[in-house]
Amino acid sequence: MALIHVTDIEDTINFWRGRTDVPVGAALSPELDALARVYAEMALRREDAVDESRLDGPARAAWMAWYATTPDTPCIAICSTAQGDAQCKGCGRSFEEVQHWLSMTPAEKRWVWARIRREGTAWRFTRYAERAMESAPGLLSNS
Image (cartoon, helix red, strand yellow):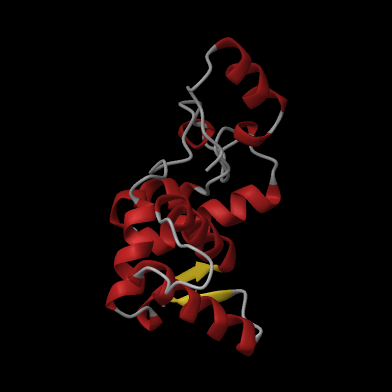
């Protein structure tokens, strides 16, 4: 079971809101309508995640279009798992997550992103990342 966190659904909705001009009172675009249904169902069930299998075709296509705009990996090219750490100091992924990253589904990858963002201890999310951004704007992304 691969879960998609509510923050990714919200980010996807905002992605499509920025690309779709919907006048007040007009019908939503197919992408926004499909995502709004998923979001409403999650709210009614008080869920903070949805199994990706519950996304119908339009919602899944809309989510995948947003996903394609996000960085694939949180790697910042400082991999302490290569030095024997169970958790990478650079990106925050576990050794197993680093090893299996290429075989993970988009939803599984985004779940890892949500966890490492929430933990906020990886160098990617600390002062190191801020200094890197100052010296090379556009190099790192927190998406």
